[in-house]
Amino acid sequence: MKIIQLALALALALAAPLPSMAQERVVPLADLLDLDATVTSEVVPDLAVVTLAVVREGPEVPALTKDVNEALAKAFAEAKAVPGVIAANGGYSTSPRFDSRGATTTRTGWQVRGAIVLKAKDFDALGTLVGRLSQSLQITGSGFEISPDLRNRESTSLIERGVRAFQDKAAAASRAFGYTGYSIRQVNVGSAGQSGGGRVMAMMNVDGAMAAKSAAPMPVEAGQVTLSLTVNGSVQMRK
Image (tube, rainbow, N blue to C red):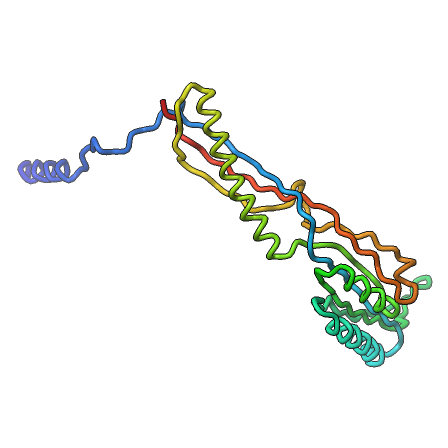
């Protein structure tokens, strides 16, 4: 029995991994540097967005729905006739209307609402179209967006600038600490987003009185938004 136990102990000892001299050297924490670099870009949104809605109220849903559908169909037809304008459904809803008198609540009718969303890079053409449509539809929202093409171009530029800024900052910090250079250990490149949070959308100035007048073009003018991108990571400073 003792011979068997000795043999098992020897086998386990031989199977245990031996310390390897080739194991990765532990990097001294004093030589590590964590840093980040943020770059920004001022961008003028190139896509105007306007939402218009038609609302009808009455006692019968079918009649209201027919009226709303006809108004939306006419708006879509007019929008499609303008080159460069993209039209999409902006939502559709049917809800009851109630009248509360004392302890009694009575349904008095129905409300049907439909909306159309218009987008275009040609601000003047969109403003003229909205001026015509606003004679029969209500302007319920307006703003500006950065188109995918413009965002991709700005993102590429921000990435290139962000990486250079990270490299310059790492080199300057390494020299300041008395090192001659550095090597990157880990790095993260963020996505372009609007500084300060929120959506990349700036509200347009809409004159409600003007929009209600006969076919008056809606004034459309985009302001600037700030896109930012951050590159962060750690580097190994070298003597």
